[in-house]
Image (cartoon, rainbow over all chains, first blue to last red; front, side):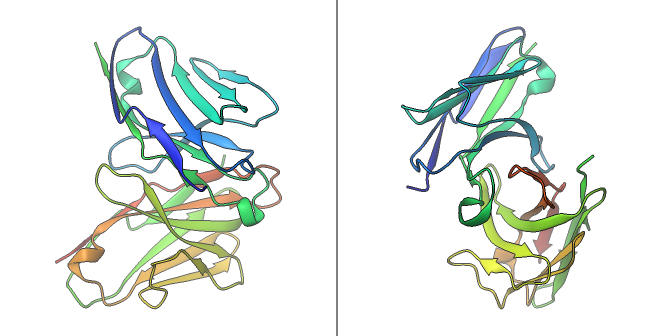
Length: 115
Length: 117
C-alpha cells in the first residue's frame, strides 16, 4: 500500500513536443502529490504539486492531471525544451505530515529532450 | 526562499573513519528534516526522519548506530556516517519541511557525494 509506481523509466521527446510521465499510488490516505526535477549531481527541486480536491493544476509549461478514482496522476510538460532534460520523480504522502507525512517516491523518469 | 544547503558537497575518506554531513535550512525554520540516500540512476531511499530536539526515526533496515543523526536546532541537522566502509559510498541528500507550514512541502539540499576508499 505504500508504493508509487512511475512510468516510463526513460523518455525521449523532440524539442517542442509534449512529455508525459505517469504515476499510480495505492494508499487512499495520500492527499499530497508533488513532482520533483533532478539534474545530475544535484538535489531534487520541487516543481509542482497537487491535492486531490482538484483534477488539474498548471504552472507555466508544467501541468499535473489527477484522477482520484483511478489513483493516478501525471505530469505533462508542454513545449519541451532541451533544458528540461532531467530526471523527474513523482511522490505521494500526507499533506499535513504526521504519520502520513513521509513522501513515497516513484523510481524516476529520465527525460531527454532532443533539439 | 526555502533554500537548503549541505556541507560538504563531496567527501572522500578512508575506510573506518567517520564523516559528518551538515544540512541547513538557510531562510526558514524546519520542523522536520529528512535524510535520503540515492544510488546512481535510482530513486530516493528515505533513511531517517528527524525532528528538532527529538531522536530520529529510522526506516527499517537502516542502522541507527552507523548513521547518527542530530537535529540540534530548527535550522541544522547532521548525519554522521560512523566507521565508514566502501558500501556506504553514495549520494546523501537531506530535505527540510517548513515550520508551521500548512503543506508537506519538502525542500531538498544539493546532496553530498561520499566516497569511501
